[in-house]
Length: 454
Image (cartoon, rainbow, N blue to C red; front, side, top):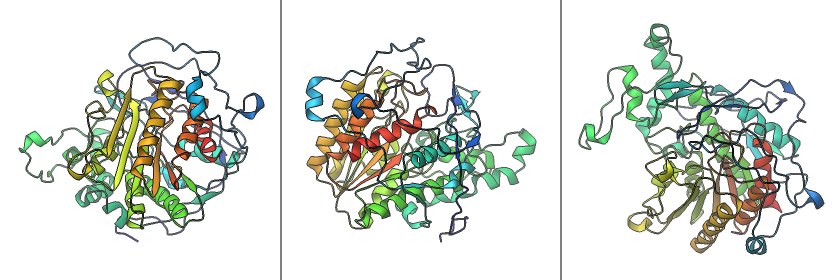
């Protein structure tokens, strides 16, 4: 067990599930991943999350929501009567037949519940959060309802994390909350979360290493990229738990017993870099998974990100490497969307990694046709790369009803994306990223996984 692991070697499943609850959207804007209020769910039997099947059992039914908005537009999205699919695309990717039972194993941990940031600061204003504990419980309930075999995550120690993340960052992250509390900042300021306040930009030292400041309240500025991503008392353990979830899923696939596995990671990770956290992400679960697969013998690994926002952390971690292909389809950051500074089509990798990074930004408002074309293109490029294993950063916040969504992807679109990913034809690990419409989070994740299995 590593120096930073502080939980028991065997986790206890608290049991039960929760009723998915509706979240309340925050005002429109161009922020990252923590922008809405969630209500605490009540425990019920795991019977409240389901996937609706369309006529003939062909496509999941898309359930529109009046809450869908394109941020910045100020008005509701036009909701079509049925998802539209181009005939040409249907010929390439036939409609999957949805099986009632999910066969692939899923990995989960109760440790996720320790991460309860309660919100963040956007444009200097405190806002309620959307990346809160109900997300993890809703994912578990959906998996149980689908009949998926659920595995509790096993501990993997520090080594796999340090293969991706900087040792100084991991050390600080492990003590960030305890130092904040010990410094009396909770009592003196009433601030119950670690909040970044000053940022150590490279220009500050002309690129020289930045020393750890003496002031506890300034230390987060060495590693934070925004003011929305706060650290709560249980955030570090939850983030370590999310990494263990991803690594356990890798182990299930690497052993050859399973074609695919799903990691119900929370908090998400694709915005986190080697020594960087932000966008509701702390440790990069997908990147740690990809490196773990490489270390386990996979000659080449492809990481495909279908979250609505660019996986900037994953891109930068593999940008100069030729053994990991990194591809992402996401809303165009030039149109005002997080992470703003990265995610453009001309970012193709550097050195020996040139050509092995691929971004396909799509305009706000893109629906199934345009989004699926981009997913299909990424899958074709990944096939040319000839990976041994695939890691999918599975965000479902591109859904039309998602409060973070600038896109209009339907449940049918997500199912077809799963089919496209399956066409790559290699063992696959799905790692959960975004998705904040709590009513439809579970069904949309299941749509992708069932599409893959079909």
